[in-house]
Image (cartoon, rainbow, N blue to C red; front, side, top):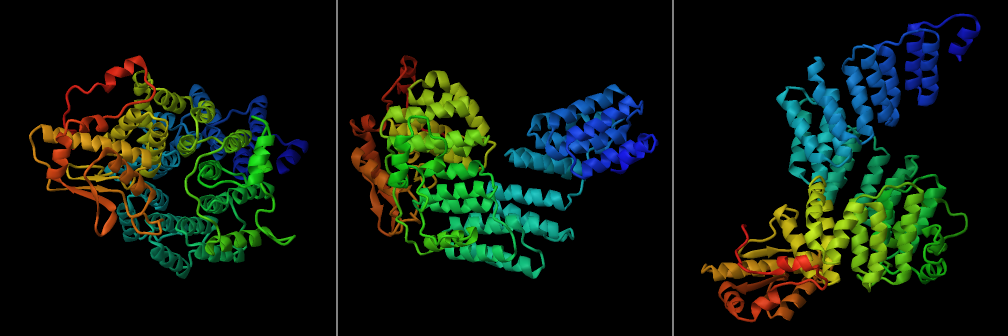
Length: 627
């Protein structure tokens, strides 16, 4: 190293030399401990650091998200009386955002004007990206509005982040408006823009537009990257377009790229949804062997698959023989020859064969079923593996655990899974377990805080959690608790346009959530009747069109609601041209609601109750809910 040679020759580095070396180390990817040694050497040689020195040190910290060290260096600057500049703050914010300390980042941003350092486009882009990456999308959008108010022009990075946020929120029209505004400003779409658009159109199911957008991208000589191919494979796989996914994978291999965690996870998710849990777990093994670290999304897909798709018999046998918690890895419970491959097949051929099997639809589509104890042990083994890999669970993991609880035969099995949830997140455990055991009075305030956090999630993630929680409660007889949760979800607009006096829309709800909501809706229109108001001439209950069913409209949810309505004697019938819709006339329903025995079948109760909760179940005055 020139720096070391210089010292050996008797030349003493000065401030400029040290600053240049520290800056070069940071840009060259040198680890912080080595850079810190050089910084400490400065002090020993009585060379006083300046703003450039600290800015370079902060840059090293920001590169790897060492936010605590960055904050300490910043405090040291202040103590030494060294002035900060916009680069200092932007670099500190980058480190803090990468460390997921968004509240601290907001404090730092707020103090900048007091020091006569005005945030610029880089400052806001850093903050917005931090909020977006940590799921705080509405706060990110708030900063965009602040930028516009301050007349700070958005750059390409800002536009791409804004586009991605709208896509994640499902606000697709606004995403397209951002794209148009971007082009009007003379900023051309780059690979990041196209990736966001491909994902956005894919979420809408506009696969034709996805194909055209991909073709346009290549025609504009914007070269697809790893994320482009992973996004396309994920989009096509989720849409059941496995031949298209396979062709994209072939093109991906021809481009000389190597599969990443997103691509593997897309295929693993598709395998799980087709009942090929053993093959999915074998791919996890392959990922690790290839040096690719599975993430929380990878394991969420596998956890959610148990009970829906029965794993291979030897998986169950292996789990049974592994003891209660002696499962060293879910991989040890897998059929290694899940797919008949020639010896020596390469990884890409193996994946292409899996896509081919999915495209040929040779896999049996298994329905929701009950989980056996061995499968629960498998899930516990997966949790153990996640812990070993230091993979932090997210709200989707919690939803998957709650869904797994709904498929348990007995409460004791569900308790095993909930105990694991306690170790992962005590707040979610407290709410779920409290409601399950009938202790609503003591956990409802805690539940409100949890639901407040759900507001930060995108709509599909939030609704999935509400659905999973209510399904578990309904499954184990806590039907009043399930209804409280869905009504709270309705109040918070988790499901858009849930109900009016004339229509109940259930198509975004799970079976348990929908059944609880039917009871709530019927109680609501009963209150309308007893207030002396007339019901609309036609009443409808919508359960969706059952797009995955062989008969259009004949979905699992439709059948569950039909059984519920029949069981309570509700006078609804299937609509003639839409079997996913139940209808009745207002006068007929009103007469049924006035019957003395109807209230008894409409009011829900919990199988397990806490003494204090009895007060919550008393219905003294029935009033229509505000719509």
